[in-house]
Image (cartoon, helix red, strand yellow):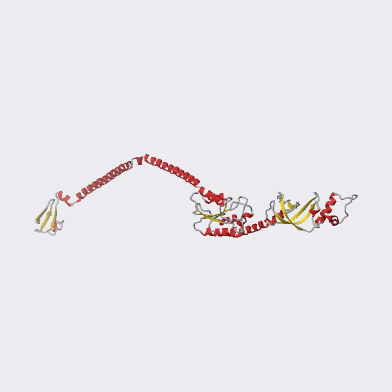
Length: 418
């Protein structure tokens, strides 16, 4: 540790600040004593701000980090102690090479004699400030719901026309066109070439998004660049570009960076592609794969239909083998026999009823005939009546010479009483 390491000439005043006499050859300090004196002197130093570049940044299992802060221009380093709560309070992720501004106080670990700057706050500067602004905008977009997966639009299965926003004669443009046409040769493009980095990038990309979104023939828009340095991609994190993409009614695919790049356009786009080639694979189906799937589908259909028809044929064979189907008249023949038997039974029953009725009538006829006056006449009797037709039952009431009619078995006789 040198006086330069202590800074501001404090090393020259350690003994005085410690409040004790300087060590001498006859009365030297022990290691612990001098460490305590130095630690006490350092503890009196005020909190300060230091700017530098992070190196050896690692977060340990405890959540604390003990990186080194490197001078931006000279060969000078300071060990930092950044506790977990300070890292969490910053809300940022740090990596080696980040330029940061830290505040805190120096400390001397007496046990190890290690001179450390205990960080109470940390933030990025330069590029770090830009990253902080981008993270703030990302959080703002998230709060507004512009990054919500529920609002992302599905990509069309087979777009009528593909809008492409990219640099003129760029590898990204070639990759998208070649891979799309390889997968679907009949694909059509509506291409707008813009600047893809620098100050002119955002306004040109915004205008291209609006133009393609207003074109009813365009079903999907690809914004492609194909990676690059962080600052080269910054135009695609511009708030105007991001909001134009979020407001578009046409689905947008963001193909700006590689896997480790992450511009804000990726967050609001309906689909993020890691490369322009990946975007091409997402925007159209593979005609070879589609033909294979169609062939597989037709084969499955033929198999299913064949199995169904074979089952129906077997079912019909089973039906035809049944007696009722082999000879449909057999059922009628059985019913004819039943009908004949029923008719015979009816005839027999009706004949029995008629015979019984005939015999009954015959018996009653005999009884009636035996009771008839004609039967009495047939036995030799006669009926005597006067001229008025009244039956004469008392001979004493008949006068001599009275005319009478006598009814015999066969015919009438006229008579005169004596």
